[in-house]
Image 1 (tube, rainbow, N blue to C red):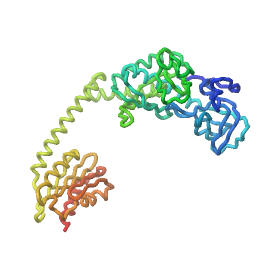
Image 2 (image 1 turned 90 degrees about the vertical axis):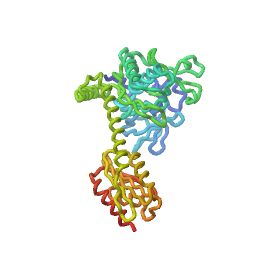
Image 3 (image 1 turned 135 degrees about the horizontal axis):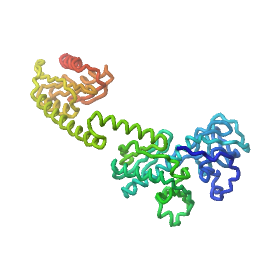
Length: 415
């Protein structure tokens, strides 16, 4: 699933479109160019400007290229009003000097495949959900994703993945078009005109499947993507509704096989066929919710009937629970603290240790927040509150009973 780049030297730079910019952008017309020779026309510290470059400066969500110029590492590339600037730390280049640039091709090719794949994936989803809005794109060596606004579920994702991989299998050509704003093609394309300065628009066409405005670099034919799979769909609030993460090429194949194996293993554990696994999981989640609801009802009943310890005129309610949520404990503690001369101390022990302290308003000698801080401070806990109510917690260290003893002593010894 690899493609051999066109290795050679590009010295002519006679494309009329590119010559309109301060730097001749070789990456637009020659995205497979990995070696080139250019003249240094400007230097500002580590930043080097060439008269022509194959280094893509980033855009459309795609990371900029890296590589070398005259053997020095290029770590960053920027587009400054049409002038492409290369960050070349520690260089000894001089204005007027000719230098060879070399692109990190495996990295570039990975990003090209992913960027073309992103076009296909969003276009597929957009066919299923016409109101879907593309908010943000991230095409980097470590993450390929985009954020959308609109409805999305895994059935839609599967349908879209199928369409994308059919286009990949068809090995259709990718075409770069430069048009004016008035060109009829603009009305047929995915484009946000308000984000594009000037009169000229660069469109990328992928066969008959997708036509979109884009400044990025793409593969020549869809088959070079190899494969695309969606790895994750998660909430993207507040930027959008969903973030869709995907993989392409060999990474997509490896991850697909890994997830397929995980699915088979999970099916064995549940005693269900892979096709029935989601149903089995949903049933278990519903059963877990019913169990949690029953636990809350039992806990409220048990805490409601809890007997108080008497410390002088103070009624002290203390209890250790297991797996109760903060809301339930807080409500029950606050309810008890409505009674005069009452203090309440609950400690819950689950994945985290949760401490809730509540005292009645007439119990001036006890400050709930001071008691809480004294209990959790030595364990690196976090929390807060006020004189009558406070809550906090820390990682479970198996110390609920000792925590209760510590809290009881603090309340008993408070003058």
